[in-house]
Length: 477
Image 1 (cartoon, rainbow, N blue to C red):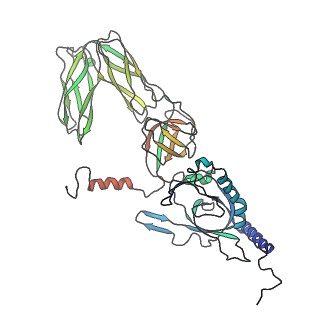
Image 2 (image 1 turned 90 degrees about the vertical axis):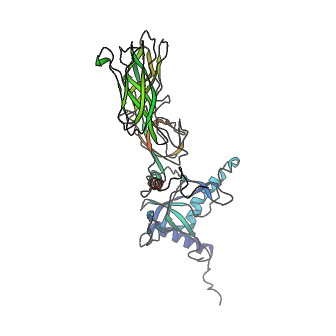
Image 3 (image 1 turned 135 degrees about the vertical axis):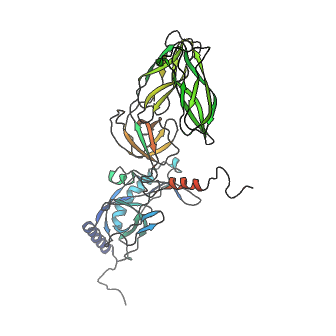
């Protein structure tokens, strides 16, 4: 039997009418969502896997939420790694709206690619929603990934399809670049992935110090036996000078080190060289405490030697040991080491390794600056930063924009991800696009995005059970 002759059964006008009614219904009952197309920057041609992708564009489109019972039942699963959320939503969008509003923009992106750099941009012209694209769901303030696109439902009414049904699952971050310039979307991933939190310091102030000289100074303490098995820093005691004046008594401190798990004394540095000691009869040096044994040292006395350094300005933002240079006319130059407080970034004192001798007047002291790089600026989201000493490269996820550079209130946190290595305290973190630069005080590698992350704890506990660095627990061959 033939079709009803009074209906055209799929004419263009009838199809336009159905599409207009669907579009109007979506505008009445739908919600505005952000559609984020995935750009494939690089793929593996052998395994056809995505190596690098980014989301830097977003389009507002109305969608009908086809979930009347909330997220799909049973989507929250308890696994051995903790609670895993597999929330799902189904969204219905207009085929006409997508093809007229979004497709031309995506085609324009394709046409604007530099053909000389085609290997860097493996984009495809998108004429319909694709699996792997993202949807920002404003009601739940979450990102969902399109897992399946149903384009034949309803099935060819009047000979045409009018909608796309997007079956979406809660997005699991895998180090993709997301920079849409919409803070509401970008901040969703500000703490996702493996995040390194960098504590930054502000402006640099160079420390200053003065030196004093005297005769009969303990200029050097030579370690004749470094001892062993120290569990704490031992005490170094130097006998009184012949005058018996306690104000002229030299003081020193031991520096310990650990080799093959055995802690011993590395060197002895002089805090105050004293005065009035006899070159012919140097004082006795005694090392006690620390639960160690076997250490011994002797003192060397010199005239016209540096016996003390006084820090006149502790400086700021020293997070690595600065270089101390003593400038003056002497028979033997002075060697000194500065100690610093890694919490405050200030120089806490200067210790004498070898005081030199033959000075006729007090030498001048020069302390290197914490940094020679201009400090300031604001890091940009998703820009690349590099450590000036370590060469480590990372990507900015978050930066607080405080501008107070006082030492008591440093610029604060810079959170980065996708690190190429490990940062070094004291180096300058420089932004590639913003040119912002601040000194790194300290950092930690806590994973802000995964509250059940315990990789480091598991590795530590495993090392106490099986240690492959010493011997193969399964036998030697």
